[in-house]
Image (cartoon, rainbow, N blue to C red; front, side, top):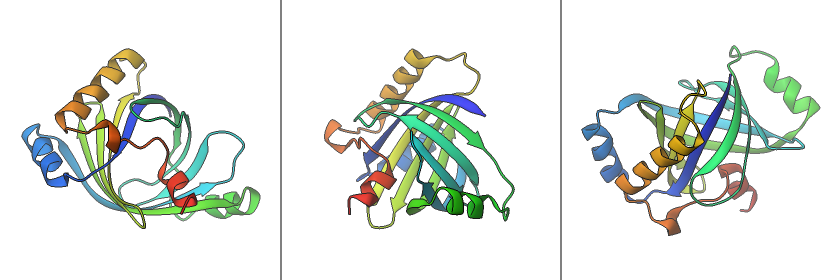
Length: 171
């Protein structure tokens, strides 16, 4: 499945405030997932296998490293668990880095919100405005992201310009 995604990542120092807003907005809480993201070496973009109980997927994405809302071209594949995919990728490409996190997953319409606690990094929030059909468009996705940035009172100095994998590689 290929989709357009506008997303932000930010430090999260006000989890309870954000949870309260999500509750008021009647967000669909999917649960808490304990995820391991295995990033593989690749020539362009990022390639990862996400192993979780709620989310289990093989993902390729390419996006700019910049603060604030950023465009991400994403391709998802949902393999069966316990296949040889991980072994094939590890043997052929090699592992770049592994990210372990606890993720709270919420949805409001086409907006996916994560509250993450990432091993060795801390707490973060991600907001993803997702266009699966191609009918919403980049401009509207950016407006949606901005709306939630303001609603959650996320400040510019809290915005993160790279992936968790990049942050762990810098440790």
